Length: 402
Image (cartoon, rainbow, N blue to C red; front, side, top):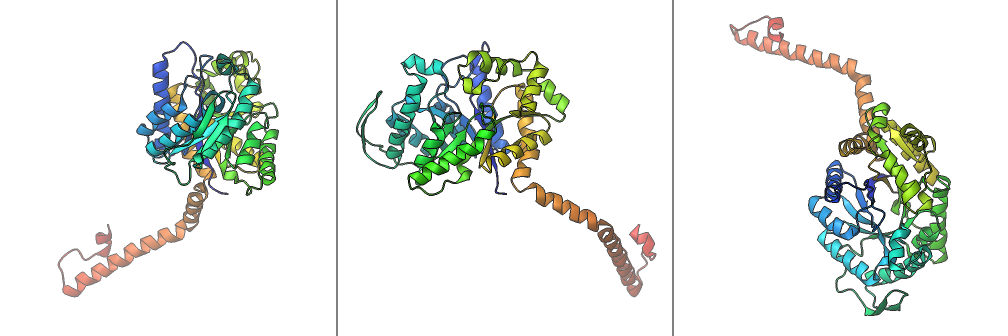
């Protein structure tokens, strides 16, 4: 199989009441950690209310993270397009593309929290319609076009970008997909990538995945575009691992209750509703048994990724949802274990080292004897050299070999 990429989708989700400065610093340190571990991507959310998802400007966060990292690509996950002037969205992303030397990606969505959009007088229907309208404008600007347009929130008059992107011809753009067909439709129409957010949490769960890409392909064909590349499709999912399943269960006692409370009682985001559970063990069992995530060992994580690959019929990147179920230390360890043992399984690196070990094991007895024979041969040869010159050194080759 082709190399599967891995990354993080970081809303983030922090329990309210704690020091927000330290929480944001912890998020930056996590991105540094993932960069060092070889993760491919980090997507940063935009939220403005509800007290848990604290990053209000993913592009500002990305600018800070870019200075602390070397390799990892950084995306807005997502920019709530309806909240912004599309000209400034395109302009800021082009600047970030230059500052990061091509490590930036633009994720677009309508905005997930109605508590955000209501503060600027928009309904969820408004934000979805504006996403469609503004995305078209943004892509035209990124192609270097001049745009004159009137949306319900902004007026553009002969608008154009003064810089072209650093990436040639442009950085990657992806559209978020949760439950409605909005995301897949737009991805297919414009030839962008797609971010299936909460891929295992929506009402249709796994069954929706293949249909998401079917819509992308159908829309692309309708608009006369080339067949979309599945490598541009990203799926998010919930995983926490430890050395043992029991340790993983203990780890998530740290914060899983807040995560459940947030999605069941606080965030007005019914597509991601997880319902009520009586206790922590019930929450863990629900995550594992309903198939919406994996709390356990690296083998459980591998199985969850395989299920997604099979159900979707193939995608390009798996993004671990930043849930903060566990303490910062346990979370960092989980990401380390995943990089060490899960990545190779899906990146073509496990088979070759396992096969090399098997070959060496099968040949060990024969080759080990040949090593001993070589030592014996060279010992006898050296002894013969001593004998030929009458050297008074030790003449017993057995003594020399010892």
